Length: 196
Image 1 (cartoon, rainbow, N blue to C red):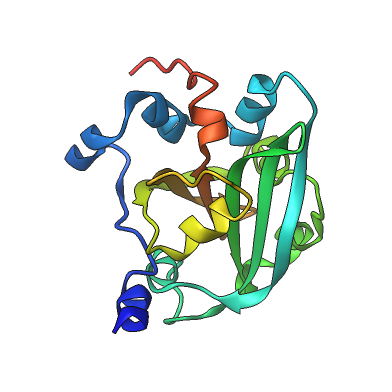
Image 2 (tube, rainbow, N blue to C red; image 1 turned 120 degrees about the vertical axis):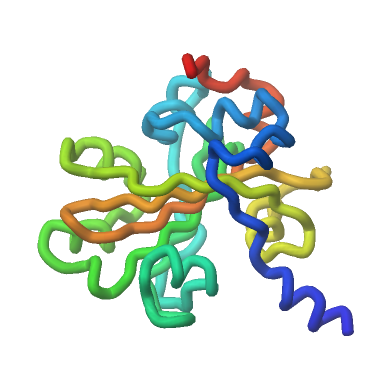
């Protein structure tokens, strides 16, 4: 029964960043979640030490159900999935999971499959034609798959985490970027100041 329960809650509940439910998000976290600028740039600016990207894995995998819907793919479609950590002095600040559908890896967008430890944000935001089409946020709990992936390195595991996912249009192709914010970032560094 436990394994079935875990499987049924592999994904958090996603909501629009400006939905009424977003009022439950702690303000210091919400400022990070709704920031429209490049997260790579924001984390780099907030890092007093050496910023780097560590690739945890990259390969072909299945999109989760809600990811398939957002990317307008058939259910559980195969994508190139890249999971990385954004680090400051080798300490993870953000866990990111990017999905690139097969049909998105043609033409100029093909370069995204060869990023290695180069930040995705630098590539996306360097192109003035990149568009952010949708921004959703979610609270990650221990029953969610991405929660465990994000806290794998932590000795003191928090009760929850907050994250966002952004549907980008890069070189005319859809790319989905999931970002889970770790306590090392949101507890120690104030979020970007955003004028609403």
